[in-house]
Image (cartoon, rainbow, N blue to C red; front, side, top):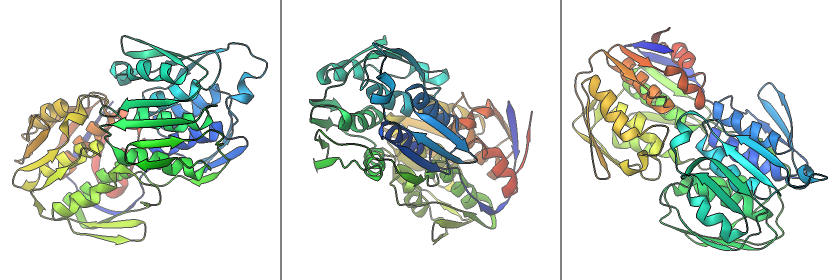
Length: 426
């Protein structure tokens, strides 16, 4: 599919989808809780639906109505009763979080589980589990470091030291699974990146009755005997998706754009978009859980996105219209996303006359006159959304493979239309 976006003004009130990151963590906790949990405002994104599918394969009873999901869990006990050495395939779609999170969760059960993925997930690294899980009593075998992966439990627990420099998703998987292991555990994380995502994991686990102690940064104690409790949770709005809407308002609001439902009750890494907007001189007002954004003259800015790398695409769009060269640090975190985002941002924005350079860990964006261009999303949802923002604030932009936004924000283009954006699909 291809979408074409024309220069437009935006206004009104728009609500981004619920957080797929929080939803997937909540699904894992509900799967391990004995009883029924209720997740309201559950997102329709591909990633969140993949997590539900995996939980169902692992024995959860799932009931859906409108945007509410009920999950009756109890894994691993309810699934393995009467089954000796079961084999199951867990299809995680294109979700990096689901695949890395459910590997150690599945290891709690007996038998062998095969974790598979699709599309852009096929080339992402998983070899860290081959090193880590044997120290905790389980086994993991990948295909030269990538999916499919076979995991054989049961996970027993223990002490493990993990390099957290590549992804926080492995840490999330271990922290969620180990409270259900029969032995007390301790996880020491060296070079922890994206710590706000770990904070999110701790907050969601706590909501389901499991408190993970952190004696010092990077060290986590998980005593035996902890149990997840059924819970009810209203999934808050997704700050990652909201970042694109806030940038759209900063570049094209007339007179303003209200972005609704942005709770801070559960930490989300991309809440830091507010700091970035401040650095860029964007006028905004906080109104409860809503943000009102006004079209602003964009100042060149410097920002460290090491702990929130998903902000690179919307911030590159913002910086394309700044009065001067902007600098974003943390570019080394972009290599193992749905695409090599550093390379793709430079290539695709260059087609529209925006120069983007990457040297070591720093990305620089040189603003210019945005010319009409045909941009390729490379199957990356955040690249597609960034290209759309470039088009509505600059000149006509055609976006190939634009359907990939369904990974995180299925209604993205419909919301743009509701905001007043001129676009067409074919």
